[in-house]
Amino acid sequence: MSSTTERPDHLTLFAVFNEIAIIEQLSRARFEEVLPDGLKISQFGVLNHFVRLGGERGPAELARAFQVTKAAMTNTLGRLDARGLVEITPNPKDGRGKQVRITDQGRAVHAASIEALRPYLEHLSETFPTQRLAAVLPVLSELRACLDADRDQD
Figure 1 (cartoon, rainbow, N blue to C red):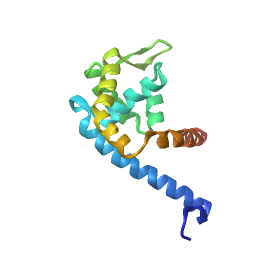
Figure 2: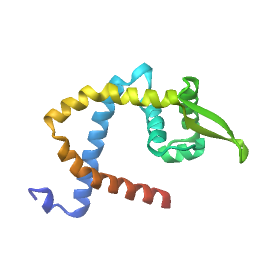
Figure 3: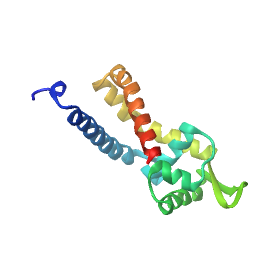
């Protein structure tokens, strides 16, 4: 079998996921190099989640979304809260629970994080036309939505 079109479906899917995993690793390493003020990628991920989806979330809901333990998420949220990037308040519907929301400072750090990556993204766009990436974005978004839906059924 010399081309991807001749692969059995499961091997093609594996090849797609393998490429995504390698891209994720390489992009994560590059992004971690430029994150401002010692921000960790896990912390940026939480900020990005709030910027992308808005609203408030409980720690358990965030832990499920990121597929980490509640203790790991509580640690990440505590670090973000100590820096003023999120606000943690009692849940008005459940006195034992908490609600988390991003602060204006958190939004600013999120924007600064993306800005810090801009020189590298500009370099990539010189090498790899963004129109080509824009063409695959709908497929990747659909794949993410499918995986997310499957996760919710488990």
